[in-house]
Image (cartoon, rainbow, N blue to C red):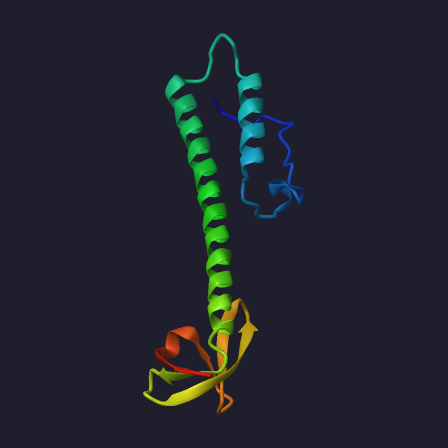
Length: 138
């Protein structure tokens, strides 16, 4: 079924319409509105092909699952950053060996652009991944 002539399916997420030249990705609410509008507008004597209907339902299911995965990955990254920040605060005052085999005392921590840095006694800021060994300390 050709949907080029269907009107009334407007975005619920705001913004300008594609006809105005703005590129906008289609969300799950937009997809459902378009899909239900397409079903209402179809000719009852010549309904949509069942394989096309099934394909569109599968696309919607895939879109919904990808959205859920994205949300879960975002939550996981936030949790990981929280754990990393907690670990970094526990390293203040400890001696560490860096990947270049130098030994320094961790003087503080710094957060920048969703990254955690250890501030060493020499004033350098390094990431946790640049620590080769935790030697101990006060």
